[in-house]
Amino acid sequence: MKCLLVLITSLVLFNLFTVKVSAVYDPMSTPNNKFGIHLIQATHDESSPAAELVNSSGGDWGYVTVLIESKDRKEDKWNNFFNDLRRRHLIPLVRLATQPEGEYWKRPYEGEEQAWADFLDNLNWPTKNRYVIVYNEPNHAQEWGNQTDPKLYAKVLDKTITALKNKNRNFFVLNAGFDASTPHQPPKYMDQYSFMQQMNEEVPGIFEKLDGWVSHSYPNPEFSGSPTSTGRGTVRTWVWELQILSQLGIKKALPIFITETGWKHAEGLIQNNSYLSAEKVAEYYQHAFQNAWASSRIVSITPFLLSYQEIPFDHFSFKRISTDNADSTKYYPQYQALQSLTKTKGKPLQENKAQLESGEIYRSLVVSESYNISLRIKNIGQSIWNDQETVKLVAIQGGAQLGINSIEIPKEVKVEPGKEYIFNFSIKSPQGGHFKVVLNLFTSDKQFESKPFEFETEVKSPVILKVKSSLKWKGNKAGNYLLKVVGAVGETVQNIILNPEGESEEIEARYLLPDYTFDFTLSRPYYHPITIKQKVSPGINILDFGILQPNLFPALINPSKLWELLPFTT
Image (cartoon, rainbow, N blue to C red; front, side, top):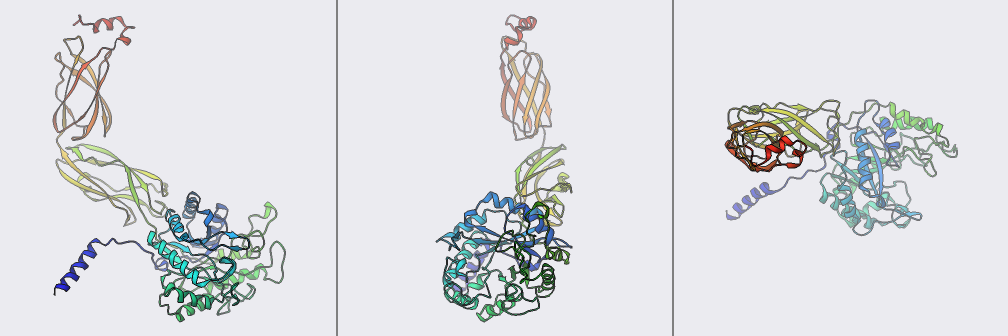
């Protein structure tokens, strides 16, 4: 019984103190546009035609596969590119790369997984899922330090998954796509099945740790195969790969990402009629998207590739090879063919977050007074406010008592991540009471994920001022004075009359906030003003400015005023 009580207590404490962390979501659990394209350059020149291609014909939020080399871990560059993708509604699939060394790509150095995790976690991704592909075709020696090594790749993949997940559970980690058609000729080439077997032996369960499966479903042989072909080395290679995963004991239903596929067309820098015509390639693409790749298991297909104007990939390029500017914006028929296919309006999840930069609902108010409130709020999430649905500030608690209405951002105003918006609204204090006000931003009826903005305020009786001062050399202090007040409610200037003893009547200052500190400045012509800082309270507050000193210099040009300042005058 004692052990049972200890166990129950431990479970309760675990539930109380365990921090719930966000994690990847199934991309097929929301409307998904599987159309995509592979990019070489992280530039506007590529993202613009990519969006026109994958988000056409009813589509939205298609995919792009992009490569980041280790030497290119530049936060400003990639945040700017991600912002561009966000505006164009494109979801990045980021493939990690080391750097080329001669004819091959270097292997990652020891601990590079942490460098990747640190860098990638500092980027503001366009969507909640952060898709990361861990390198490329390691069953080719050219892609892995000039020698295939499935055991090392398994270890690198395992460490990279751990490093990314430790940084942020929203990293959606994917394997390197394999070349399913490569021969088994170690150490230069290794059969994909053998490679995967050795990976699983070296790190048991390595494939269960993945969030999705990357497939390079190329139509071989010679990148000219029929879109109706099945099995390994076809546009349905992904089906064969799922069978291999099952044979290896993998029970996890991994969603599929076809990040490379495509046919070689005859057109290029040099015409090669042994390849298919561009028209036939367009026809094959349409057939594959409508049949081989129509499965609900497939999240995205990003054909290789949008634009490549040089050997060796010119025959894969969707963009025409051009030697003059006149043809630089033209595309081969597969571009128009895929544009015409009906697509889904994707709705990937995004983190909606906000942060209060300045402003407040005052912690004390005067009974029956109206106040104009300005809250400057920063977008620290992933979405662009008002991009698709109106964003509004709503009082979750305490709004009715203070007359706070929902404030919508005007439809024409878009607030991108890192930018700010000022919400202006008015409140009216009741006859009394203590109130807790909780505000948050909403899109449609969904509250933002960030912590709401909380304020506490109490309605109090007004501040009453009684001003005291004297004039050097003068027994009679009577006259008109100016009182300037600067503080939480801005700046106010009012006339004050002091009697011969240098005291004002009691002045009800309803514009002042009880329990706030203000700068009070008392001035009179030809005297130096005096400023005091004082916290005020409900009821009578004495503002004692002491002695105002004569300012003789301005009076020199006006002898009559100078005469009035002298000690022997009344």
